[in-house]
Length: 117
Image (cartoon, rainbow, N blue to C red; front, side):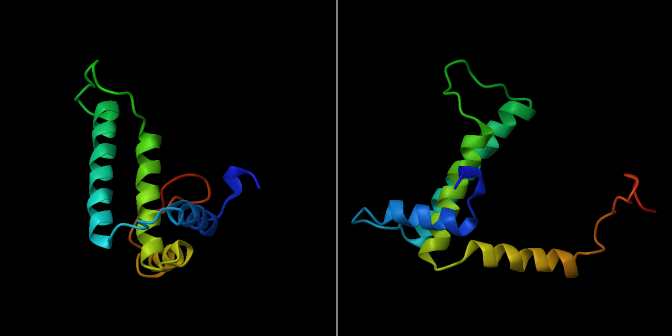
């Protein structure tokens, strides 16, 4: 299977196999929430350097937005695994909400690529 063809379940299984090799196992949900917040801050910093008005100092380590999103995905996957949350089910629930409750919330683009009136 190509890396790009993995499902969320595959990713959850891979992370679980990695974490399961250590006696410490998963951190507590509170600790992982703190880590997720930390990673979000690092992502925000990278976005600010790339899109904002604050250029990176020449002495700062080069990181990418992709790396920071990957870090967030890893920690979020750890959190989901530790709480027995299936990320595919969680995604499906959120999309159902958007398709139903929020279906008319945003201005849709019509078939010709123009905004509907």
